[in-house]
Length: 330
Image 1 (cartoon, rainbow, N blue to C red):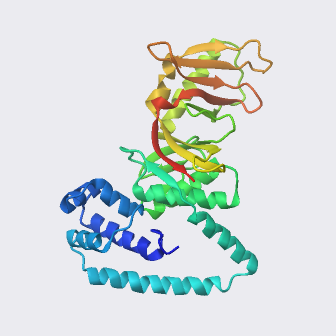
Image 2 (cartoon, rainbow, N blue to C red; image 1 turned 30 degrees about the vertical axis):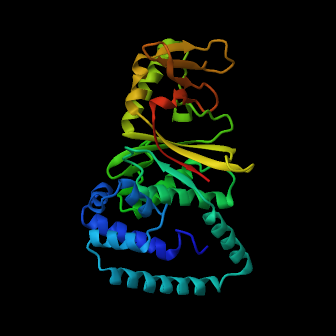
Image 3 (cartoon, rainbow, N blue to C red; image 1 turned 45 degrees about the horizontal axis):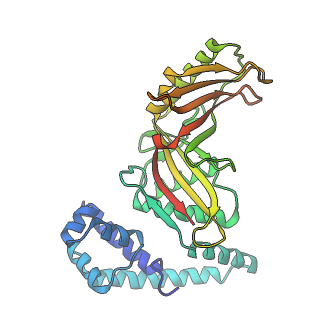
């Protein structure tokens, strides 16, 4: 659409201004001070939430000491060249491929509400936009939420595209999914129908193996294995998905949130209260390690599942004890 802030030329202008600001070592706040404006002014035009008018563009260009003629020439020439090349490629598509491309373009045209929470050292403005686009692309072809495997792939691709150093660990390092700028990350997802907004559930935090446990002393040993397992990484993130009614229409919308689970919080399992479920039909019997705050309110539980998979789950983890980095709704 002609009035969209997401045209190719608008995107190229934003990229040019962001690149110039970063090359000069200026933060958004520092640039805003030079302009005599609030930081949100810079943040909004860099994220594409608003357009710059001619006067505002000249003010920003002056503050960044840019040659406005060269900037406009770059946008005009590159935009035409890219559009021509794209047109040539589209003309070679089959009718089926063209139909699929139209569906993808329609998806990208839909509005998205993306929010980065202040203080996040994981989600940048650029990441917020790129991750939202990846979520849209995923739901072009699928009604299911972004699963763990795709979550890992998307995180890796975006951080690489933004200039980060990312690699995957060897298979012998359980729980560690990505190394981002030298820091080990564990990535989880949750999108089941019973998901609760205020409670986090990790259905498989680690495997418990083929051993048996018959009493609370055995559960103590499993808890110690969990504590040791935490040393495999430094940060734990969960991508949570809700399918909800849109506030603006009767249609369902997709809602994602990126939550970080503090490792020191999970480490409090050292002081947990144990319970063996002797009446269960499972063999071995399942058990709980429950962690409470000073007021006796439950913080979270370790659940030692004695079923077929023999896995450790984390149940009833209070989200208010975790950090929400960003949300996306579309």
